[in-house]
Image 1 (tube, rainbow, N blue to C red):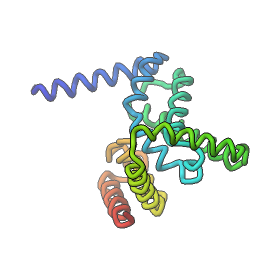
Image 2 (cartoon, one colour):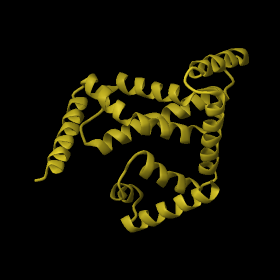
Image 3 (tube, helix red, strand yellow):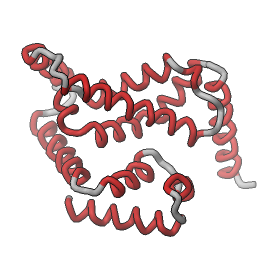
Image 4 (cartoon, helix red, strand yellow):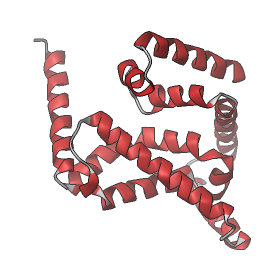
Length: 198
């Protein structure tokens, strides 16, 4: 075995240990797993929440709320591997997105309060980014989200599964009831269409 093989084996054993501890209601293990999956969770939330919800709540707040729900319900996770943890995490995220969208569509919020909350949230970032940097980043993000929104639901789904959730072609194929070759083709076409929109 090479040193790289040893490192990969140790990482796999650490992950399995974390997953086992998480399934035994070890909140610290769940917290570590959440931290490892946080970038993918934020990206998932940003792409699935939609413009209406993201106009009302920040992606970070939604992701934080999902993490809180997962930690509060850690006893529900049963050991089954990383794919099962991801499924649990992103299912929780979809429920949170649906709940928050329903809340906002019901018109339960005061517009003046919304404006204050948005101003407060943006002021926290002002120290880190210049106005032109913020504008450029926002424009790029809006461009990607707009392009993603033009894709058919099945194409969005395969991109999310492969690029955001980190699922393998085999895992996606099993979930969709397709061959790995079909998934590769579907992903390739979806990414090409997204590139055209961008």
